[in-house]
Picture (cartoon, helix red, strand yellow):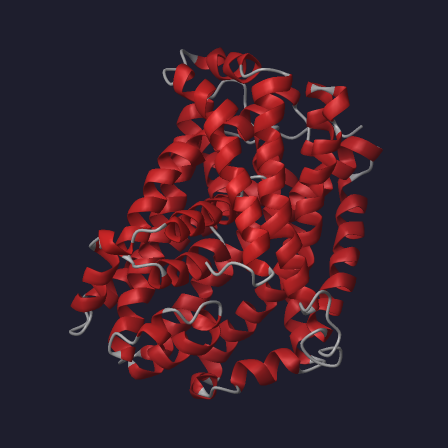
Length: 449
């Protein structure tokens, strides 16, 4: 069996784990949800949930990984043989997400190139639709993104993931800060900044809470098996709680800056139009190119923005692939190169199917969803909250929280021990169950959130 890699230091681990957490969820999903659900009040609710709910889940997953020194596929079985099937569910999440995430990464790669070479064309309403419905071009950009992701994982934890994260994550932060500063200094940005930063408690609702809680999973890479996998590479000499807090801070700061960069810009461009603010997933690929086109130097700003999103998408796709590859290595004693190439070929095949779902197979649907949306529905609305809830059940009632606390206290006292017991046993499972039910009802059109 291959010797298990470890990160060379805490900085490498934190940046790699933060790179996993910081992805399309921060730079794409967070801003449009914040815009849709009242700006400041959504931001406040999200931050409160991140430092409470998010902390508990992050610490739990890292501790499971470090204690077992295994990927989730084998880690849950090591904790409790009867509950090993939870690890299979946890591994199934990245297996579902990887192909279509890389396809979207290809879209971002295409837009990065287009912003540098033909930014004016991206303004047309039909540009994005025409691109994704084409047969050949989306597959070329998808393949480029997939190859880069695969190469990083082939090189392993130290030479691939850690080195990439040490370069990309600081660069990502610098570009985010620079773009956010540029936007907030725009003459018409004040109203958008006020909307984003000032909580309006009249807009606080159960839907706001559920949307923020759902975003927490998506943004922090929780319940995907990723943090368990990265935790298995984390040194026994380092403090889990300190590393978890640093990952959360990095992740939340990037999400906050992304909102500060995007919402005031769209607010100014649209004159505060609610339809533009709640454009949803199309905000990045349809609305933002128009915003950049209306700015002085918008071509450069747009190219920098999509470079930023590309970096974030790449660090996340690497972590998703690593979670799958690590499980295969642990289970089948397979070499890293072989395991990575097998998953890459699988990703290429299913990603191609997803791409065709917007073009030559657009009339094919599953329960009313196109192929990509169906995979997204199963993974994000069902599997993520289900795995998160089951993780809390296993830790809270099967193996007991003491097993996690013991791992944490290898490096000093766990000051929030009593709070942790309450959260992981009672509060977290109930709230996650609410996400699970609401996500299913929302995706089926029964509940609008």
